[in-house]
Image (cartoon, rainbow, N blue to C red; front, side, top):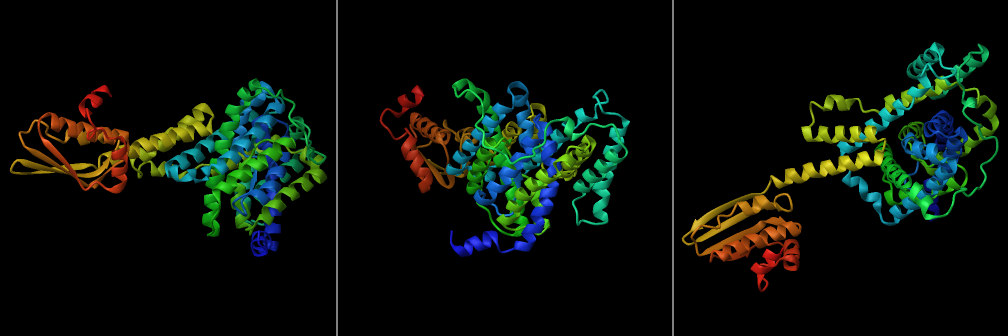
Length: 495
């Protein structure tokens, strides 16, 4: 990398990046712990992951100034694997996730965002918000030890701090103030509530290299591959979505394929050092940018400061009441949800709203973000194909014993039937001219429709002439069509 590019990517905004990185590190602690809890693992797994991913992605990522760490979207996909097979399989799945993402980057799958419509993205975000909220409900179950009306009061107080403090000052992230205030109250007043220390051991040392203790066989691969594929897709989608937001905020561009490769490397490192899989964080990335972060230095600072805070303040982190984390996560879910989508239901086309709703319902029903996005993209594609198919128009003029048909629009698998039904094969004429200078033939079905039309006319003794076919259409027609081949009628009947 030339020195000028190195300086621009790292040292062009030192003061702003250092301050923004510190703010992000402070805000990362409660979220990393909460996401660990969602995944069903010790808090140190999420904290180690956030440290490893943030540090590595600072060097390998394709979007300077974007924050990547342990996230709720990824944590939700891990729950079943952790419950059924344990932490070691999660670490193995994290490494495989990284490998898949590197392959995605090499295959330039980073360009996938152009196939994801705005409706699918909105549904993705809304579903993520709903799942994060639902994941908090077990901590509000009165039948759980340590949960009482005091828990509800602390959650309400925490939400009050989170939403009211920014009206006074934005110097310190309100979620961090919520954590500090509720922790101090719980310690000073000796309130009997569930605390982070009740959930598992927090890290008090640097992460160490540890290969996952799982059998290296096809049975293990069969267990972790579906989860790893889902995490790879979801992580890449969320990262690319976040990169688009940061691009708009900073008026710069990012490299989606490099981001995919960088994210893969970061997840491999995370899995090898005891962390869970992660990806870009929409909320933290926006906090970083709005706090003045612009370059890779801000991301590196966030990761390094996070580990320093853990090693120095570990005993205090154990005293954090779960009610404070529930308040933070409820805030995350509320802030993530696109509330404008309710209003847009009455404004946007019904097909757009249906795509968004199907995406949300599929994700919430299956708890699989990748499956929901796939369903939304498929439905959006079907609606688009149906809309394009309706654009085709065929007119005709009779001049003596010759009829000229003029075709305008796109001929493909959806519009092929409309194309063939527009011709009158029983009309007693000598010649038919098909003017396709304003049409395009896209696929095998379109070519088949053209074959069917030509051969039907010839079977009735009518001469057929095709005019004006563009170069792209002619290429596929010449390669696949059979109407100009020997024994064309017999060959069509065989198919």
